[in-house]
Length: 96
Picture 1: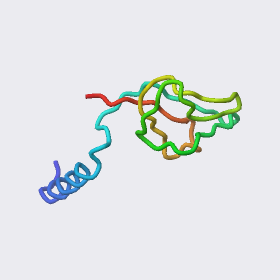
Picture 2: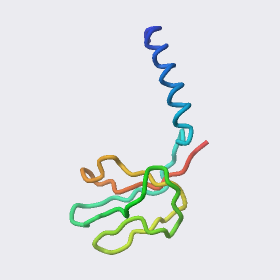
Picture 3: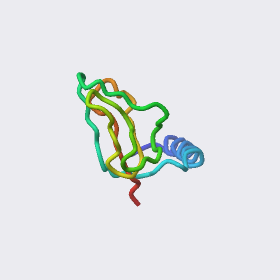
């Protein structure tokens, strides 16, 4: 369904991604999804980045009610457009 030229181009980029992003998990399972509402004043603690390991009980963010702690061991995944929807963050784990 794709041309040979497209297939060859894809292969080159696939190799690049594989070589340069070996640390990224290939498949994830969502353990927790923290939803936010505009009036909750949700704010992530600084220093977190996607796929960073977090431990259960670790303070990840704050809102009008106080600290928001990780409910699971896993990795944090934060949406790119965090301020535009109701996704605060996800706790994920790699799936084989």
